[in-house]
Length: 293
Image 1 (cartoon, helix red, strand yellow):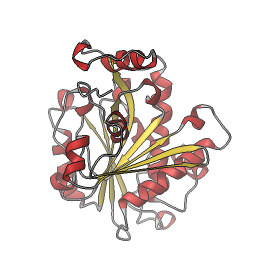
Image 2 (spheres, helix red, strand yellow):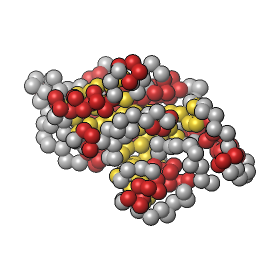
Image 3 (tube, helix red, strand yellow):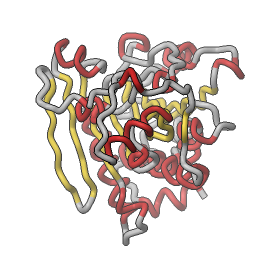
Image 4 (tube, helix red, strand yellow):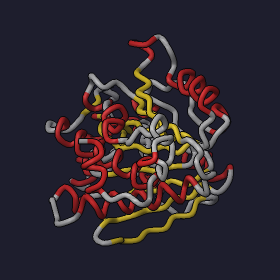
């Protein structure tokens, strides 16, 4: 059932609700050590129009084994994400700085994935002149806040930092919106197509992309909310009831899990560690534990 009245930030979900087989879109799936990985490639303008997503790569990892607390699941999951993140970043110049940006409002839990992830990012730009940090890549981190509390668009703030720091790339972390309750806080999407903060909940701000910042922008997002109308569609479909999209009420309500505090903290830590492992390949999760404690 097509359900275009409600937006999702996940390219995988846009593909699913259109039944797959879309011109200009390639999709591949794999299972890696118990973790399900899906790659959606938007190849051209046909695919971009169909999925309402910019041309680029969209990699979605479902980390259900981590939620079950399976042995070594955190290290395995962070390692897979780090590998995919390195792939999207490409070959960075040796010694070049990377800017990590946590988007969102840290005082509103479903929107705090970005700022909380920065708590686990190793900030090394000011340390690489020291012998013990000589092998580390220079990394800077910023919590951009939101327009309502700073008076500054996230894209404007990050653009100013890019002009000052001249990073080789920006990694932007944000909370996303999903169409399914089953994907909330148990899915990570990586993309090299940049990000539009707030778009999933109808509050789109200025885009962060190569075009706006002048450097590659890798977006890392975790879905934390779902529109109540999407839940109604999900429940109707599970009951075998076909509902016309126009018949579904647009409530304007956004729903999040009741244990969002724990789920968001865990997901933010996973993202932060994945960024560290991607930018400093010689480290392990245990090393990061020690360095940020």
